[in-house]
Image 1 (cartoon, rainbow, N blue to C red):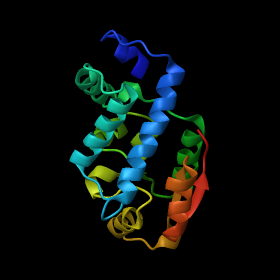
Image 2 (spheres, rainbow, N blue to C red):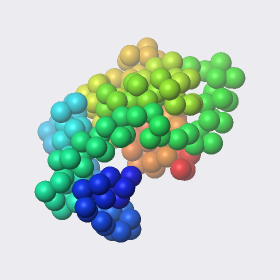
Image 3 (tube, rainbow, N blue to C red):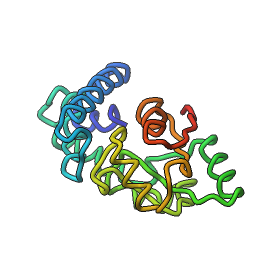
Length: 184
């Protein structure tokens, strides 16, 4: 989508270069959040600035970066920008059939609520926690603690299912949660 939207503004960058720049920009933003005091604290403004920084880095602060950022922000707010992962669907179905409550806990922003109300299997979540709304990003222990307090559960009663070995799996384990890795 980054390549498609940038073309609207006359910027043509091969997808592999975009992917490489995106990875580097993502890592830079992770380092910024890790170095912050307190580490991994976030807000709606921080998440927007984070994504703005990623877009600026991907497009080397091109003159069209403002417009590209706005178009990308709006695009990823749309449920149609997202697609279900088959393995995720199976895991949610199994949890619901087993009588478990399902919560969505993500390093995303306020756009997640609208997306989760439409996109399967997110619609099956009983609770939706976006990092920008709870004030902490994974891997912060406060992210996990806030969710567990809001759910009224103990760490051993919670299972994080995620695709990121560090942000989802290792961080959940450090918080005392169980964790299950599901690669994308």
